[in-house]
Length: 343
Image (cartoon, rainbow, N blue to C red; front, side, top):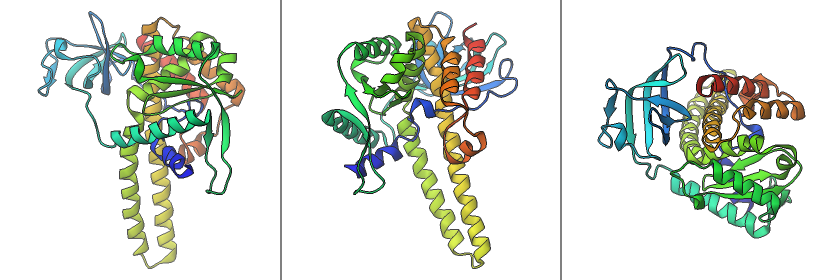
């Protein structure tokens, strides 16, 4: 059982708890004239825009459609995987230069991710609590909290979650659980299980709670667990290759230096990749809020409250040893996103 839980930790590195999520700062000049690339899903459509990765994408007569699936906007279905190369205009929209769409099918490691997360969800539900394994098989598990699957708190989370879900997603694809703990946190599994800590419900308004749940929903809809698992495999293979080269170096000092450099590079790469997923989840989560009628200006406010409660983590240490980021960075990024898409 504990071995399975450890496997979950490896598989779900991108679907980390909300309080540990992170983003990088927006690049200078992103708000006007910058070339932009999107790799996500078509989730909403208006008369003027296709919404991809939370961004408003406009298509005109000069837009080039690639691939065999869609030769026009009308042929792109909600839920399709979409890649866009375009230019950010002064009003924040993205004018598509090239767009390619394809149906959202099964991908590498998707079956494995779903299988593992289904087993973990079943185990936690059967035991009636969320818990974490010890470092060894002889260690006791650490109980995070009992599961609340009925009552006013559960009903509130369910109601907000159903409002936030994009239109192409069936309500049965998402299952919510409330974890009975005073901590502020939430997490999502690749199979559609979303876990919200009760401490958030006591402390936050519906708009603020929607920030957290929208973020976690984006982890599910954008398949961050599966994408992270695929990336982790390649990083592990790269690490094995570097280690083999290092072992062939006869000089002890030089060999150690190569091994340490490889370790730092691998961990830093993992952290940066996770931050990219978290950044995307923030953008998409705000779009879910907007479309559902919640107040998107609650986004920066939520991170200000996290900052007040938990403080700021060391930025350099977190870059090399984890996927954490300072709430101050999250606040700045969300404020920039509001200027781009929600003026």
